[in-house]
Image 1: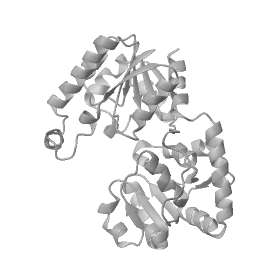
Image 2: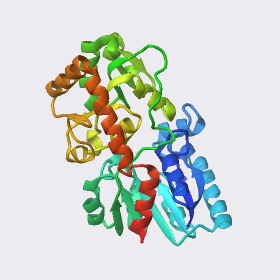
Image 3: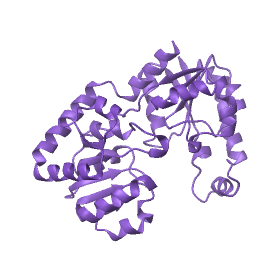
Length: 334
């Protein structure tokens, strides 16, 4: 198929990885970068306008849509594929000439942060809505979406693969992800307890005073291969879920083991089905259980390495790349 693909195309983004997945699956893909609308540069006129009005800058929105229309006229796509395009003009999107129009959301579509009033008004007009949350399937159908399919998150072999450690740092435990209220207390506690043997990477953590006062390594976000380099320096890589999205798995559920890291994650049915607890990953349901796991990793580092290696082999054999998800989506279309 010829696929006109709309999504944020910055280095390391999941949207870029899925676009490459469609290409690897044999399709002709042209990407329109929507980053200017969804994530305008800090302090730019578009960013200032969005902060003041709580709406996307109309001039930026118009420029992106003009680009979409021009490419559609030239490319004549069979499919318009939109990766979380809830902030684009839905009427203009759905008027783009294409046999199929597919909307994909990597986040909980019941969470107000991941939808817009305009998107909801036009959601039933999409030919297929794809979600990475099982609980969203019936919810989408109940609010009028037509065809709905679930596909899990994935990893990108271009970025997520075992890497050699850089420098001499080796942390007992670490977490890569954004600062969120539901994560803050646990990670600050671990930072205080493990000091310089604990690392946290991601946006927002440097603004947490209690985290800064600890001896933990507090660093910014890491994308692309830098993610896997960060994983290599950590013995126990924490996989924490986003309660606002009602996560039962997340991208990290695949990315951590694909990068060769030891998966230490919250216990859910999806995590238990993905990796075998005790031999391919460690799962926890309480802070006390997590502490026991970290103590075990500290006492028995060779076992931690073996479990990480087994998890890596299981993920690679499981068909969890973005190209596999692209094929699942095409299969759902029929």
